[in-house]
Image (cartoon, rainbow, N blue to C red):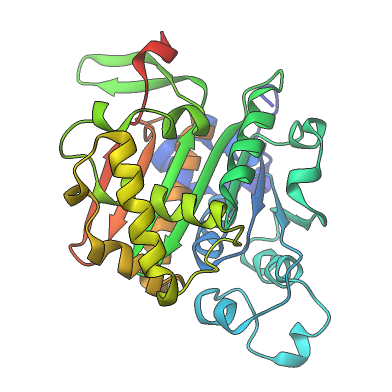
Length: 323
């Protein structure tokens, strides 16, 4: 990838971007290969952003049919039912994304992502997954980590007016601009399993309440063998019971996970389009930074709650594992 230059056509098309982040960063983008699983509204926003930015290729995986929920949040799905008939979510989104930027190769891969071997992921530089079970997040992350090359891994989840991004760049080197020049920096990231295994009582006192709430919802769906977002207000008593058990187990005061926040996440399992735009935009920015090796990357969780309009970055890491 490092030895290939931008074509004249790419240089002309991406002229404005090249003026912002330079020809080398654009070259890296144009030669990068991205895999995305789960064509939710947040992922649709993310895909739009990186296709317009000019990545080399984008592969979509989502064999589900179009649903009413998908139509409410995913602007890539055509409103015409006759167009949707017989096509998967990935195929419909693929058709729309190709129109955004013909120079980006957008394709569809069918099948269960969890059943694919590690060699499948070796074709990509970035893997982004959404709407996955806790077990699948751990599994795909570990498959990426076992490869001989570094593959950037991201998970993203958006429920009602709340969103979460997790980032694993493994051992990551990047250039940081300072007033007196450029400094080479290195960050060591934990895996998803390592991050969520950090004892809650060891985290800083004011860590985002969303971090704890999302872990409770995750654990509930896993224990009840539910698909992601297959949850309703009828489940709230059981979710609150699990919260109490986890707080006792982790020696955490229950006030760190407000019942009202869990109720919102349970009732609003669907996505809220304006939040999709914010989370998808943030994710796109982070992936571009990771590919170009320019700018401070996010480490390693990002949370957003539209009720207060705040975005928070949390470094959930066990220093003993990263040394």
